Amino acid sequence: MEPSQYIPILIQGLVAAAFVALVLILVPRLGPRRHGKKKDENFECGIEVQGNARIPVSIKYFMTAILFVLFDVEVIFFYPYAVNFQFFKENGMGQQGFLAVLMFVAVFLVGFYYVLRKGAFEWDK
Image (tube, rainbow, N blue to C red; front, side):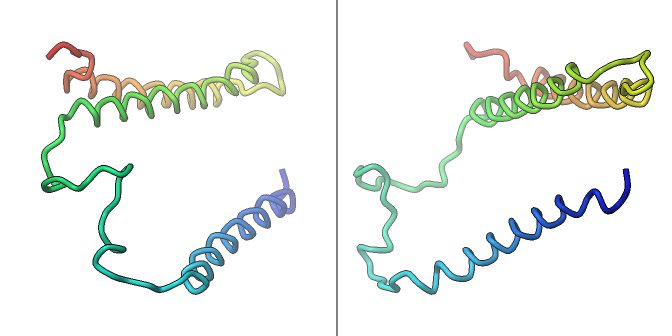
């Protein structure tokens, strides 16, 4: 691969970054700037605010999120690998691809071991 083949990706990245910068700068300037006690109050689904929002939350919620991301990322990376893996062919991923996936699986297993030790699979506690 030649460096010139990456120019479309670079252009796409620059356009995306410019769009994000434009939205972050332009949108606050276009919107109204009205502030007041009632307007600045938190609003959640029409339910009146009760108490402090800084109460401790069970670790189970965070473990569920970590598990979701862990397994979601695993599927995202394993699917293209499974489709393109050709160990013995000349144009396949070969040993380098196999070693890259082994490193990915090792990182995945470290995360899996972490959630296992934290008790994320013990739902009845």
